[in-house]
Amino acid sequence: MKPLKQHVNELFKDIPDSEKKSTLMQEVLQNLEEKVWDLIEQGKEEEDAINKAIVDFGDIEDLKKELDVEVIQSSKRDFTKYNLQYSIWGSILIVSLFIFINFYYSPDVIWFVYPTFAVLWWPLTMYFKWVKRKQG
Image (cartoon, rainbow, N blue to C red; front, side, top):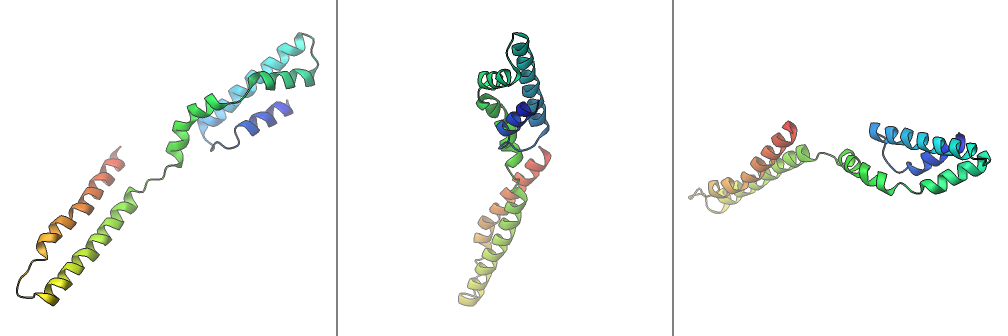
């Protein structure tokens, strides 16, 4: 029934495509069609039966909540690789600045090594996050 299919498509239009979405759409459409056939058997005309089935069905907020977990996971991009790259380049620039400042202002004392250890924790942490995300 075309009006039911259009209604179901309208209900699910703002949800990203997925296998779970298409399964739920088919189930909802099937339930609506069964409701329409039951109403027709009770003596209602087809158009009235379709409208009553749609009204009785209501909205799909509960179904959207069920799909939210999947929607959030599918729309959430994995930025751990970019965070790792950013931290590596940022650390290289910061360490380079320390080296420049050290040799330009106090070439007698080599001190840039100490803050370098502190700065290297940043890409190291991002690396472990990246590996953990890649494995899981």
